[in-house]
Image (cartoon, helix red, strand yellow):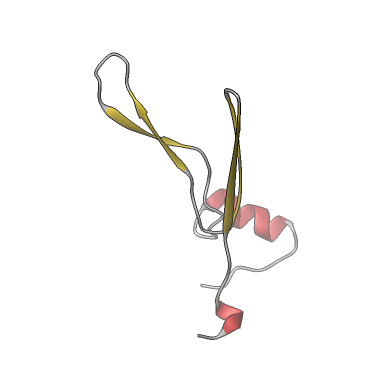
Length: 71
């Protein structure tokens, strides 16, 4: 693979007591599984956002920082 067309990602979670911190960079995500107390159903709770240039707000952030997005 051409290294100029590839990327990297990382995600870290820190649980301390009843607080959870999430930090991420790149095309990766963190999801928490939780039980809905009313229905007993398993829920997926999004903890992070992917840093993908296909996301309009991420594309705008990249361009505002002076960089370029190629298709």
